[in-house]
Length: 65
Image (cartoon, rainbow, N blue to C red; front, side, top):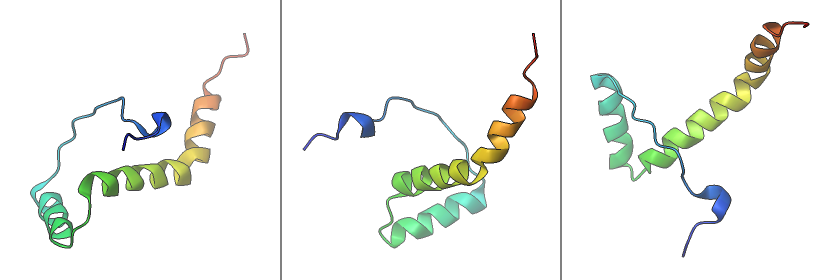
């Protein structure tokens, strides 16, 4: 079954992990955790949590002219 259009992935980003982080992700994989989905959820939660600060910083640099 195809994913709905809004859930299809359209952007790829390559990221690097430390050895400790890699081992932690491997441990999660042993418990049948989908690592890709885990990372997507973590990023989504972090952005949602910090959105107010991100937005304030962006607006602070607007020039009045």
